[in-house]
Amino acid sequence: MGPISLLRSVFSLDVLDYRITAELRSSSPPKNRRLPSISGPSHSGSSAPVTTPQSPQGWKKDDTEPSKWKSPEFFAYYFVFATLVPMMFKKAHDVSKESHPNFSKYKHLLSPGWIPGRMVDNSDQQYASFRNNIPVLFSLLALHFVLRRIFNFVYSRAFPAPPQNSSYRPNHNLTRRKLFDILFALIFLTGLHSLSVIKILVILLLNFSISYFHPSSRLVPLFTWVFNIGVLFANEYFKGYRFREILPFLIAGEGEGVGYWMDHFMGGGILSRWEVSFNITVLRLISYNMDHYWAAVRRDEGAEREAGSVIEKKHADPAHVDERDRIETPARPEDYSLLNYLAYILYTPLYLAGPILTFNDFIHQQKYSTPTLTVRRSLLYAVRLAFAILSMEVVLHYLYVVAISKTASRGSWANDTPAQLAMIGYFNLHIIWLKLLIPWRFFRLWALVDGVDPPENMLRCMSNNFSALAFWRAWHRSFNRWIVRYIYIPIGGAQRPIINMVAVFTFVAFWHDLSFKLLAWGWLVVLFVVPEILARKVFSPKKFVGREVLYRNLCALGGVANILMMMSANLVGFAIGVDGLKDMMKDMFSSFHGFGFLLLALVAIYVAVHIMFELREAEKRKGVVLKC
Image (cartoon, rainbow, N blue to C red):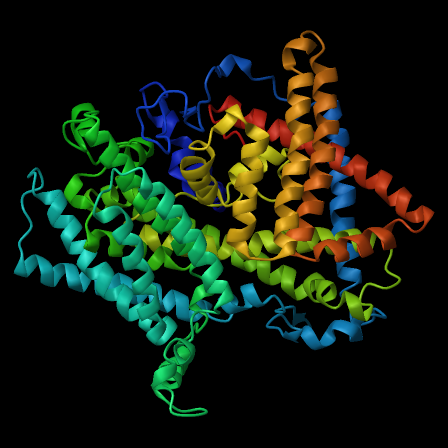
């Protein structure tokens, strides 16, 4: 395999996530199923049909257009790209030079770098906590891998595995894996959070009790959502429930007492603020209770004589089932047990950041090894992760845009040109994308190495999105799928799209952080999605039959507007806030140069949207339709 062929393999869709190309390898037609509603799976009208992302309903390969890559139009676009993209990097690099007048205003946020002659912008605390611990994390991955093999060897000697075709083999696999997962997780969490692991276990047991006694009760969804949203607020308000505050009767005096000692045992752990990373755990708590509830309702209504029988009837080998079946088919009643629950909630590779798996899917993968997991695919995925880390390192060493945005109040972008201000905002967004992509891919790699295949969280580059609706399908994809399954469809789905999106993004904003900045971001996203929904209804493709070129250019103009709105919303939510965006806009458009730059930027984005259109057409010609 030559270097070009290797690079194509590394950056192929198949390596990114087998689900993307799974339909191409299957001879069976795409399925069209309904997800369960909050009142149970058998109630009609409460769910919307969900099709596979590869083969949306009604799509045919004949719908694709001829390739435009070698057309005169696209050669003009290539010239624009070849001219403007290097200029974009140059503008951001110019404000990151030591010779720049504002360099001294943010220099204190820079650290010594490993690239000769360059410092590194490690001022983003969220990514810095990951970057500074990359050697430790990879060592932990290797240790987990080795200990898993040792435990499997010892367990198989003590409890020999049944034959491969035995009906007892899946439960044997589940028991072996969950015992190791729970033991390793408890040790891992103790090192990570010290004695705060006690608080975590108390919350987990309280949530488990909601669906334990009467899982098919209609009160289970209500209590589950009230409890877990309450936990999000309480964790923030009480700052993780310090022992010295919840055990006042044990405090002997200032700086003394059992409560104070418990807070500082082992230095409070590597990550003493356990509540910061607990938000992702809340999603798994809800997933377990809702999957348990839907399974119990289905059994009570006689939809299935035995949970899991659907898979057994449809497939000779339960290991070779698609992801949709793994998610939608309930586990057996005995699988909704405390030990399985703890193994799922505390599964170490996915505990801190995901990606998110539903309980049904997780249990199935514990019982049956996933045939799509191969050593080659995992190694290529690791190489792809290494490319992402290296890209981030280059950006942080040459573009100090995060430090500049953090010191805007000190005048760090004063007197910068409109183009430079725009690039500060643009590359801030790219760094946000990379700082999320890299940890998500690391923890997914860890799960892949361990024999669990969660969905890929980032399907597209941040700069390869022209639709606000499609953007959220590709950004934090496992969270988006969780929202669709547990919130959007149960409350009505596409029947009331705008109202339901307000509810969804309000939850998403509060889930991220209890702050006005994130709430403003959530509502801005909904506000900016409304024009796209209306435009899709007004500018239907059927109205432009015979005028496809005009339709494509109108869509490109709409894509330009979408991109500008998405950039504004994400700068507000994850970078500079509402006031920062106001200041940036004021500085950019306080002169005629700003409006001249805006015109140039609109042309560049317009060209980029046409390239995005053709990239998706190229995917469709291969039979892949991601809907994002």
